[in-house]
Length: 243
Image (cartoon, rainbow, N blue to C red; front, side, top):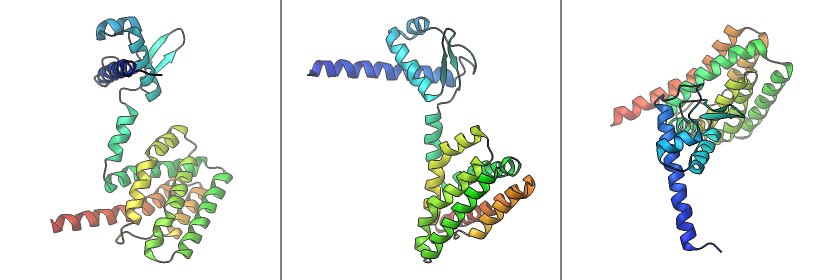
């Protein structure tokens, strides 16, 4: 059975680890050790930060898991990134619909270009199958309020486009960004002033990707995304005018 004293000791240790993590995170962000450089040993860090080696070891383990550090057996621990991905995600989640849609447009138009050059027949089949399911949902929910039912299908379609680029790094960034994309889409589809999903423009994008023409694919993707971005701009201007 855990005593109150044990709990307090555990809390104290946890607070010390958290403080160490924060100090290391700040030094990484400040560029104390550049990306690719090896950080000081656990012993050196423990002396600098005035904490035990076990505390440093646990803090490093957390930052490795966060993607800021990487440990190589027999070599040491190296800087992978100077920014904490969790902080980046929190910043994205606090962004407005317009901001998210603009970043989404940048990611997806480049993905469409690459997809035109690298797609497989299976990628095209997948995109068309998703669109067919989306068309069924739209047909069964003709009222504007029913458009929210298409959100997951629409996100699945755009994810399929990104994955057709066959760029693992781009796919991971888009998946990481996906939560905010989904939220922005729910916000958009939930507003009666937002444009409805037009399956034809999505089909035009698939046709462009299938053609193998990267410029055509980029233009088709931009045309698909320009309408919701313009609608958001209009809504924001309307809100600002009412203030």
